Length: 200
Image (cartoon, rainbow, N blue to C red):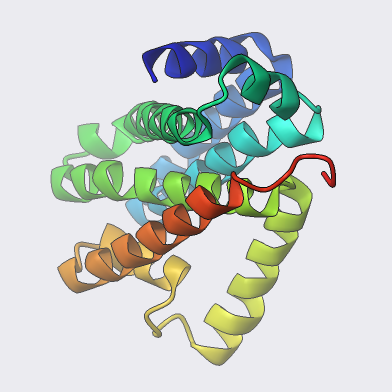
């Protein structure tokens, strides 16, 4: 598993688009934290989800998943390594992008968001392992938030993104709900990684 984490971190640092996206989102997070901690927490969740989703979906998009599984046939161990990498990257992104929130004295909001944002990354990574397409996942995620969570649920229902926003505000009940969604997605990903790669 450590070898998977190491290789995934190396891939992230050497693929120019991934490194640039991480740098741009971190800078944007710093800018948004000047406006307010709520804006930063929103970006931290969306950014973490995006990093988690693209980190795994790139293997299917660039057809490196076949080589990855040939080199490391224990797919569950590979998935676990990818999830750990996702947590590390999103944690680093959230810690750095929110430093201004911490400096401004909003310690509690900073710490809560640093803890909760990696859960969104896990949700994105598990979703990408199921969908195997970043585009499909992002379009589905945006549609889900707009129509299901915002229009139908008024951002009040126990749904993933609504739960994240409330959990990042310090609601422990919504944190448990978000954790439930993440665990369900990870279970789905465990079954999905067994699927044949020929159709992707």
